Length: 93
Image (cartoon, rainbow, N blue to C red):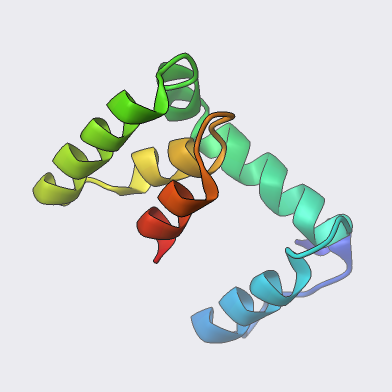
């Protein structure tokens, strides 16, 4: 986050999360860097589900939710071209 002008030294996780959330509603240095980081970190999962139809993606989500393995698929859902707003709201509730 140094490149965005924000120092994270001696900041609490709550402060960092709050700072990110307040900057993600529009395009700016923080939102662009955060998007790049997430897309890089979860690129395999995003790629794995890229061609999956929403109906199948919902099944995968429910399975992963039941298993407690939601981190990777959650980011795949939010970046998925076919994911409806309703589905995204269900995931991020």
